[in-house]
Length: 247
Ligand code: NAP
Image: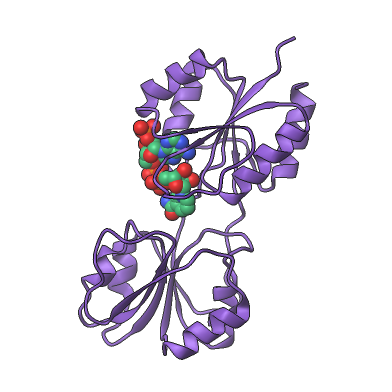
């Protein structure tokens, strides 16, 4: 019998861990990356890069490669890819599952303002604020447009929008320690943290630093995604797949 081929829609650390775990169990794994990151950390197994060309492109890819299962392990904020995967799998009759880290939750000691977009987050900063903005490069424009606000925009890749007066771009890749996050907040005299609710433990030290230093947080909530069977850890998803399919 042919080995089951699994398509992972990747771009996250969990997707890499999932690929390694599935390969160890004998599955044939293809990970798809959007191709927008300059030097991505590559998962084991086959890797393809670049968009599929919408729902129609993904549907024909699933048929051509005889994909048995699709796992949407994209970042919680990659809403378009998740919606397209849902529709392509529905049309092709290929099972779809999602791997998604649980959301971060505010504690009683946190001061979060929840917003639904980067533009809303930028608008929520009071005049004179000094913000640490950790939302990636694509949506940094509304912050640089606030000439009455200054701060640090931290991102992995260079921003296409040049920093304006008062703003500094800090290019760094996670993980970050609590000590380093506290130092950054104090050294830069940060008054507000702006972040997306990515979840997970790799980038959550900034929330602990904000809590300890009593810094308010502007938290961008996750976009809605289509209802799909979801798992929070690679291990749980692999166990379920092994119960459903022998490799
Ligand atoms: P998006 O807005 O949901 O998707 C935009 C388009 O990019 C999709 O229509 C698709 O093109 C292509 N695409 C996205 N993910 C793909 C994948 N894994 N494989 C092949 N094509 C893909 O996505 P995004 O927010 O720009 O994120 C792009 C990638 O970066 C994702 O893989 C995501 O996991 C990763 N990422 C995103 C964030 C974030 O905050 N958004 C953070 C960390 C990592 P076609 O329509 O041509 O198929």
